[in-house]
Image (cartoon, rainbow, N blue to C red; front, side, top):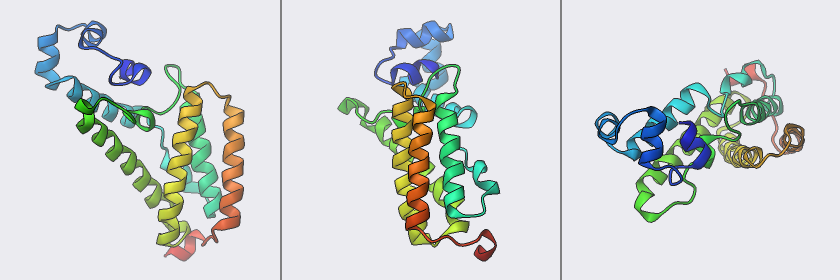
Length: 183
């Protein structure tokens, strides 16, 4: 997982993987079927253990703007306070790749869409569906940008400034329902 996170799918060879895992290539193929199979398992493990989205952070929010703030603050923490790598492995995974890897890139895109849908579900108590859909697309784009900037070494406080600006925009643009009104 860490090799793929650090170097991307195309930046890691079978030799790199077998050396890191401590197995021979036939064992890797027997266990995962292919490098792509191992990559997909690594993405799944990443999401389950270190993932960049923490929708549970929204639980205490009383308004849409507060929910957005809690979600984005959590994203900043998750992509900047890692002992291994900065950024989100799913957000940055296979955005561009060789045509031979198009199927894996589609899987990565589907995982990013699944993250967006998690945002939709988490924000439903705070706004109408059409507003939530639009806002979730916006927040997914912001979170991907935060992830890339974190990977590039941008300071956490600078990323928190982005969060502050986004929250101000949400508060001004989207009227909020109280959580109790969602019924």
